[in-house]
Image (cartoon, rainbow, N blue to C red; front, side, top):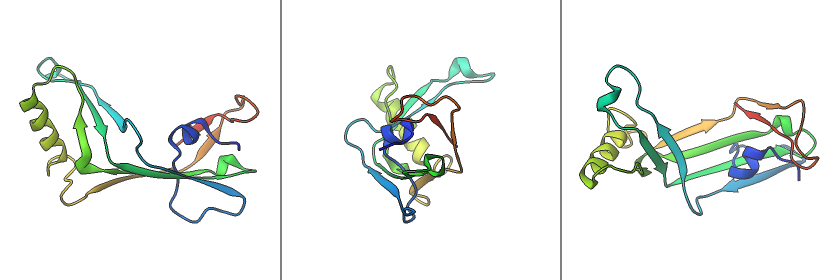
Amino acid sequence: MAVLPLVAALALSAAATPPAGADRFDARPSGDGVRIHVAKRGLFSAFAHDHDFEVTRWRGTADVPQDHPERASLEVVLEAGSLVDRERGLSGGDRKKVEAQAAGPGVLDAARSPEVTFRSERVTLAATAGSADLPRGTIT
């Protein structure tokens, strides 16, 4: 089974019916969730904190045509209300405040938009593939 490393690692893709000759991979959390690191930047960065968020509820699918992995498609759906800040050094009160702000109307607005969906636009295979079984590339 030839798949892109990112697809193999996350086992994700598009929700559409896979094309003939394609493998579909479904993914659900089975350990750590999807990690998102937010770094402080700018003029007031000395007064801010970095944040290491984890999305604990998510799902994804990947469709990978066996003979044309460059036609692979990927979809990842994150539940906006499942964001947890794992940044070390935050007090319990600060952590709750940050999580409420991230899920609130000023950022993700999880009450009105409970899901964040990422869909691939294209797959570009590297000119020098890895092993014969695992081509390498970029999912955009």
